[in-house]
Length: 243
Image 1: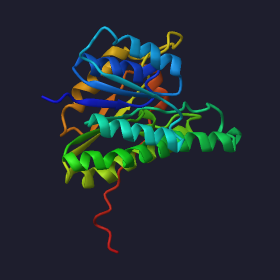
Image 2 (image 1 turned 90 degrees about the vertical axis):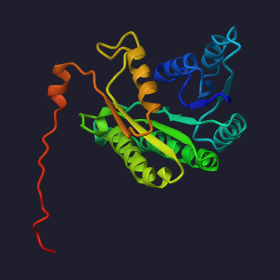
Image 3 (image 1 turned 45 degrees about the vertical axis):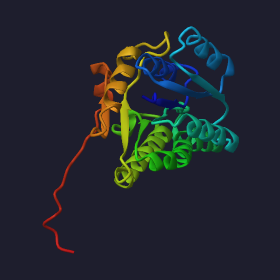
Image 4 (image 1 turned 180 degrees about the vertical axis):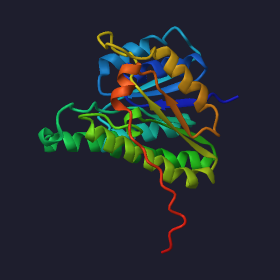
């Protein structure tokens, strides 16, 4: 039986690195992308003694056409079945009026344009085989806004809209799309709080294997944080209004 392969972006550290481990532990081959070649090599060495796991690393900025082209070629060669759009830049954490034009460009191009462009390149591979799974790592802030996260909210909300829009088309080709809305995982030791990273990636792996699941929310925020970000939502049924 042919092994399945997962392509994971932003895999040189943090959540992407841990996703690589859990997919490999469950029998997948890997195509890993990141900007730090040293970290990618370090992760790849972890699998050197495991002949059952084939790992291809592709270093490069996803905003560059050359990087997208290399990932497409690797995906085609290894006949991938899972694409995980994980790479993203953190929000600059400054008031909206202080956000620079460069920040806007970097955030929108990396957090929104990159997953759309990469998905468009990989999508025909899935169409041809009539099978595929796209996992978009989103954020809880696209469901609940947070102070000084305007750019992140805009990009992640756009990513959610992209998933919803493509889902209907993709279903015709047996391609499923999972949006993962998550709060912070403790991928860095200095974080004051955060979910256990192994718990998070295992949940993502578990539900990405269920094509009927469209959205997964993993919210491990402490109550003190949730209270600060709790939105006011008012639902109005306007169906009775005439046009």
